[in-house]
Amino acid sequence: MQASQISGQAIDPAQHEAIRDELRRILESNAFRGSRRCCRFLEYSVDHVLAGGQEDLRERNIGIEVFHRSPDYDTAEDAVVRVTANEVRKRLAQYRLEAGSDSTSPIISLPPGSYAASFRWKPEAAPVEQEILPTLPTARRATGRWMLLSAPVALLLIAGLWWVSGKRAPAAILPRP
Image (cartoon, rainbow, N blue to C red):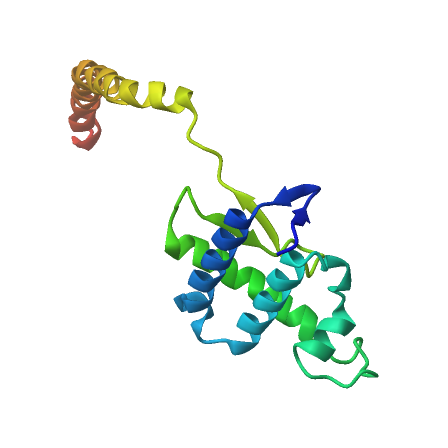
């Protein structure tokens, strides 16, 4: 297998396999299951990028090879490639929402203005985040204490306003002699 490059970085065989596994999960997901056209488009794009042929991912080529248009079809009149690319972007976003977060899987996307799939891996959790997480309950406790201390003050203010407004209300209701 020839080593591919994405964004100037070589992709090793393990990454190829991870991308193929993620592509399989995407194509089997609820987001893509109902659209063979989107599945064919995404699979074609991923295969071409992994093979190092992202330069061939042009609207006309995709229309001919994926959607079986004639070689002389007018891309201005037949927007099947552009429409499908937008649909794939929406379905990928839906898939990511439904699938959740798996730190070992690559993220496959279709950047706007491009028909070439892009891949990136989620960064590992930073040690700083792990240090911050234990302090969250302490912050919640501090917020709880503040609310406990401010609640009586707020009640006293409300009672004072009620008492002041209560003294004036009967005077306004009494008839004038």
